[in-house]
Image 1 (cartoon, rainbow, N blue to C red):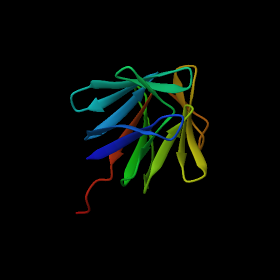
Image 2: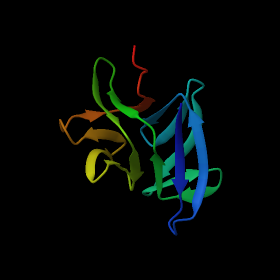
Image 3: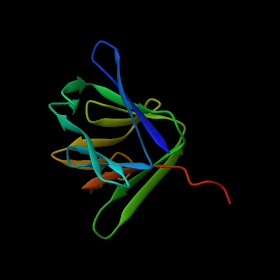
Length: 124
């Protein structure tokens, strides 16, 4: 399970959301497997339940999967990540940016319609 913790512009903690995975699809953040809308990214901020947040963080072993109709690009696992101003950060490295409704991989420079965050699979 992954937990996202949201933070307001003045560093006040906001809501926390837990799910098996999350998708960032255009400007929407959805929790899976149920596809529940968690937040919308509007004007560089996350809007959730009538509140506005500037960032969310995930402090679990997390995988990032860029997804398209016929291909994927996988990165991680990472110990933690943060999404601030439409940019996904791992430590001080930007790995993805939301541009014109699509996620751009900073590693390959390829654009993707969807970015999925999942927990690292357990070791066999």
